[in-house]
Length: 401
Image (cartoon, rainbow, N blue to C red; front, top):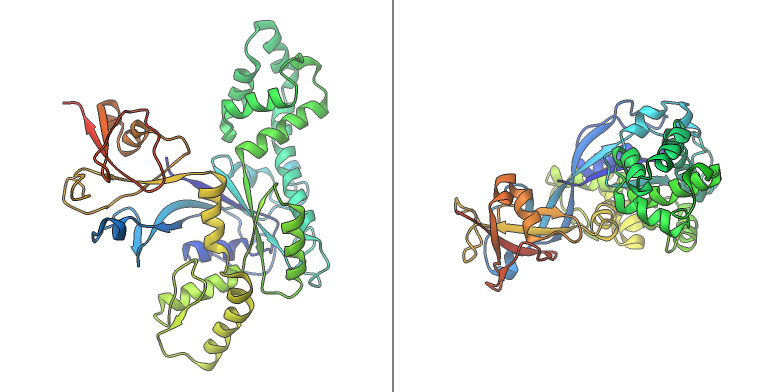
């Protein structure tokens, strides 16, 4: 399956820097709108405790990384061009980029927490713009994008539901599944908004928009990356965002520039630093300029906020928002190895409620089809196909011969 995260927001908030920091790919980074014309797609990683030390083994990762007992599992990141107001109507670079978000499981909304860019992404004096307005702006763009898709043939669809006496959740699901919407999302929206009892042909525009907002929140959940957290004007704005969006969104103070600088310094062998760490260790020879830059990051990002926020954003999107779990499949439950003897080579990110049989299908469709039972490698306990798995489980799949 894999996890896809869309990186979204208006121009000049640091989206491409966030993407570069999370993937270390070379993308165009410049302080002007529409630097990103085609969506960049790359691989970032979520970080969690590996099971290797707990099990007393030396692992040999194949589809992921393990550094100092921390496992880094890959996720796909889609960096979409900056959206300007009324992009859903084709303004700026328009719907093309909204379309790129169809397959994203969740969105990372990178905002300029310093309030230093206007609604179009043009630089203004820090503190001028209320970043909360940018959160609402993106909500509106997404809602109106889906609304126009639905409204296009709503009369026909609504009447068809009534004439055929089809279940409305099924028909609406079929209309929206291409956007990553699930049948359960549609059903919940209909029930909780009281629309199930109303004939679709009598829905008002307000009803349709309320339905779309509800479904969008479920199908495209969002983490707010409050970027440029090192700018003094950002401090009060971040406190306001944390206060006013409490219970609605996860808000993470972020400095993508600081993370990119630290990762590049670590890659060059100048410092010891793992993404998500609260500090770094100098291990190479630095110039005075490099020393000043790193000290600035330590004093203005790491000390006040605990990290640069980039790794935390990825982790919270996958584990807190989507509630995915990481599971290690093995062929030998005693050595914790695969069929070729490699110890803990793979880890899979699975959605909440994933079962032992789901893991089998994730490994290979044929293994899923021949699934007999599973074994919890820690306890030796035999598991049925519908046993729900837990985060950091180590599982052997047994197939029928």
